[in-house]
Each structure stands twice: as C-alpha cells, then as structure tokens.
Amino acid sequence: MLDQVRQFIETHQLFSIENDPVLVTVSGGLDSVVLLDVLHRLGAQVAVAHCHFGLRGEDADADEQFVRKLAKQYDAPYFAEFFQTKAFAEREGISTQMAARLLRYQWFEQVRQREGLAAIATAHHQRDQAETMILNLTHGTGLAGLHGIQAKNGAVVRPLMGLGRDDLHDYLVANGLRWREDDSNDSPVYQRNLLRHEVLPVLREINPGLDQTMAATAERVGGAEEIVRRYVADTAAQARRDAPEATYFSIALLQNTAATALVLHEMLRPFGFSWVVTKEIVAAFGGLSGKQFDSPTHRLVKDRDQLVITPRRLAQYGTFQLAEGQDDLLADGMRLRATAHDGAGYAIPRSRSTAALDADKLKFPLTLRRWQEGDWFMPLGMQGKKHLSNFLIDQKVPLNLKDDVRVLASADGKICWVVGLRVDDRFKVTEETARVLAVQRL
Image (tube, rainbow, N blue to C red; front, side, top):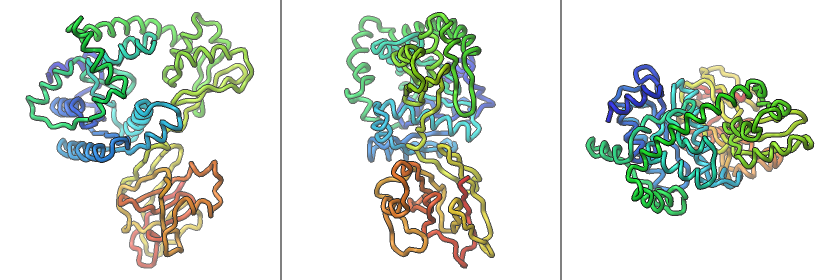
C-alpha cells in the first residue's frame, strides 16, 4: 500500500515526499491514524494538527490526549485548537458540521502559513468520494459537486484518495495501529451517516464496485470542469480585482459574459456563495447600491457598478497560542509582540496597550482567546477576584465592543492580561521580578 500511496502522490503532484513538510490533520480515527503512519513510513516530514470542537465532552478530551501522544510517538510537531463551534453555528445560522468544517480549514491554513509547511493532508478516501458526490447530487449541485473531493485543492491534499476504506482497515490491522472510534459517526442525525448506513449499502448491491465507479466518474467530470474553469479564469482576469482590504468584480464585464450566473457562481465558489444566492446577486445588478449577501465565510455588497467581497471574522471562535520565545502572534486582525527583559531596573510602560508580566510566573504556551461568561481575574491593585463581565461594565466598555475583548491566559488557565485594559495582579512586575515579558498590542 505504501507504494500505491507514493505513486498517487507523485502522479497527482500533491507534494514532494522528500522535500515538502506536511501538516497532517489527525482526529484520532482510523483513517487519519493510517494517513499519519503511511506518510511517516514514506519518509515525509510531518506535523500533526488536531481540532477539539467542544461537542463531545470527555470523549473529545480523550481524543485530543490520544493524538497528542501519537504525535510524540512519531516525533512530530503538534498543534491543537479548541473551538467554540456551537456558538459560531448558532450565530451564523448553520449546522454544527458546517461550522466545524469552516473553522478547522481556516485554522489549518493559519498553522500551515505560520509554520512554513507546504501542504495540509487530510485522510479522505474513495468511500468519502462516493458519499460526497451522492450527497451533493441529492442537494443539487454543479460540476464542482459532481467531481466530489479533489485529490488536490490549493494547499489541501488527499494522499489516500486512490484507496478504499477496506484497504485502510487492512493496513491498520496488519501494522497493529491503535485508533479511537467517534460514536457520532453512527448517529443518524447527520445526513452523511444516514447515507452511509442506509442508502449506499443498497447502491452497492446494484454495483459492488460503486466506490471505484464514482471515482472514475469524478475524474471525467473533473475534465469537463477544467474546460469551464479556463473560460471562468479568462473572464475573471478582466472582471476581478484583488486588493488588501477586499475583492472587487466589475458588474458591466460580468453582464457581457455567456451564462452570467454560472460564470459568477464559479468565481464566487472560493468565497462560499451558493447557487441560489448567486442568482439573487445577478438579479440585483440593476438595483440600488448597498444590498448585501452573506456566505458562511464572506460578505458581498453590490456597490454601484461593482461587487465588493470581504471576509467575515471566524477566527474569534478559536484560540491562538504564544509559545515561549515566540516574538509575534497574529490573531483575527490583532497583533501581539512579546519581548523579554531583565527585571533589574525595568521601567513599566504606562500605556494600556502593553502588559508587563513576571515571566517566571507564566506557564507557556500563553493563549489568546475571546473572553467568556464566567471568566474572572484579579485586576492590578486588587486583592480579590472579579468577574470579567462586571469588570467590563465598570470600564464602561460599549455593548457592541465587548465581543472584541480578548484575554491572554497562562497555560494553567489563569488570565494574566485583559488585552488593552488591565494586567492581573498575580502576574505584576515587582522588585523581586527577575525576568519580564512585555506583551504589546500593535
């Protein structure tokens, strides 16, 4: 199987096994455990990423501990993220599955760029391909949905797409690998599970080679999509303009294309806009300025003679970590800079944008996150604790700005700085402080 995966990687030019470091996404389940082991045995440089979505209680905690130990076993760098998935799903009016997908892929890309990795490897295989294509067809789809999961999509690669689930299971048993089972994979609440356990077995009675047949169909549809892609690319070269703050599309140029809605939908797919919403956007071309449309990840505004697209803020539902010795942390538009100083003679800055902390009282990594109900700390100058919700009221922070408040917490969970507002008294710099960590919000 190793040779088969190597050949698939080389044929589809996913990445260079010898030269490209890869971020392997590992849930702890059978598929991802096999992926990690296979890439390790092939000699790839691997790092491990694990998402904790806060949905499965102690089981999810156990998954995270399992993957952490697995990464250590392979001597691989380990990255974990803890998401507020339900809060994001409820706020955006989407399913928890969609919320989890959006949050994790955004975070994977952040880690990849920050760590200088070449690709993000996921454990999708032929069964996933068949499930995705049929599910997409059930909901209604275009060419992109009919080709299902691509072996390579930007930085995301799927080295196991040439294999079936039975191949992975046989490999796991033969090599004595351990994995964790996610009970939610059997829940009929999720559409994919209903399809997997009720619909696909019937289709496999009709065609025992269903997974391979669907994979071949996906390849042919992918060829047809390439023809469309080239036409869309030529149109986008004229109609699209990318700027640091937004992406712009010329309405006049779009109106002169064949099948305007179809072409625009292909252009808007990377931004998450559905076919139904795309048709509404086209219908608004001749309307008043200011009409806006939302996807789970972006907002589009019809502004006079152009469409303006900006990203929505998803990162506030995750956490970001500052390792010991790390100088900079960029999180959801907020940049922190950390500098180490000798405690002797250190002058504490008077600006609230800088926190002077006793470095020997901190436990790394430090975590930057959104404040939560129930959070408390000991404001500088006070001996007792204070709930952060009450502190923000005392500070007269406007209601519509409270969501922007972030806290910097030590690895033991203690809040050491309410960013831009107050240092925690337990981490203050005193005459006895030997080492100072100054953290500045830029």
